Image (cartoon, rainbow, N blue to C red; front, side, top):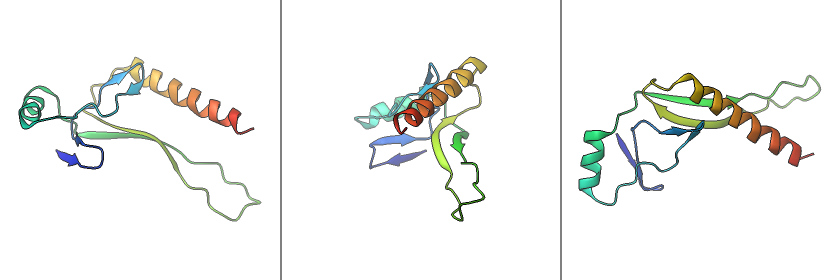
Length: 103
């Protein structure tokens, strides 16, 4: 368990996934009692899932493209398959919409 003072929240709990989207800043506590209650009632994460994209290399370009981290969230590996599918669909839609807006 760790505290991120920049974002004012705790890292180490399982991130809630709703319709494939992880909830941002789900673990902000305004006092120590809330933190103790969270420690008691919320599951702790033992894994981090990260989704990344590696651009395809172009033989005409000498620079190596960077990996793009699309998302990352903490889990206890009890996520259900429909959440994984919704997550991938959301990532695809976001990527495709940004690709089209750059054209």
